[in-house]
Image (cartoon, rainbow, N blue to C red):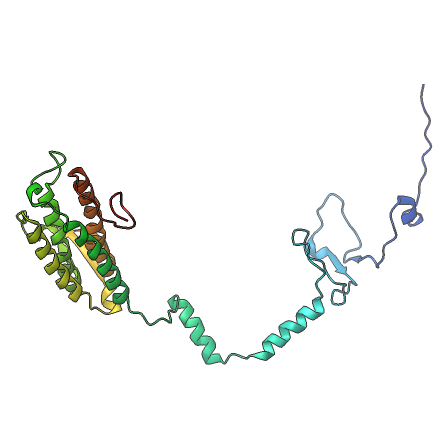
Length: 277
């Protein structure tokens, strides 16, 4: 069975919005004008062939609501613009001050406390050396030769090494670098708590006096070499923190284990220990 359909031609200007089930436009649609009267359907339309003329008033549009996430009230664009204008008129920054702000921003953060780098470094140094001395003060004279493993340093050797570490400060603060090939021979182990404390106190006093440096001197580059080959270069202050303070903290942790293995109460370090609060 074949159905016969009737072809009906309808002009576009005869179709209204009511026929499409859509509400009528509330504003005049944009008018598109072709600059060339002839279009070739097999060619893509170039940008310059179309000119648009829109009659949309964006200045007097109604208030725009915030996005759904913020759930705010409508924003009055006119009032926002007025507030911005008042803020601009309230304070006009001189050109010289604007240039100074820009230059400070390029240099990095601007600190207003007036603290020199050495002040913060000294406070950190005093704290860590004081804690270290408390552990050295627990050394037992009769067990200085003991060691937890055949490959480990003896208790006296470890304590001697810790007492000597602040002496690196002279090399770091007074020289531009150091070659490990010129390192002095290893020191003899100290055999008593009194000798270790005396050596440690002397090296700490000397190191503290050497920290009286300007900011420029503390950030100057310092290079470590081995037989002429460069190992690293970093700011002098960073080398001091690594070679003296971090190095001391590292071996101080080992010393706390040595004390524990010898049943000696471990003092508080960064908080209460199992023996002391």
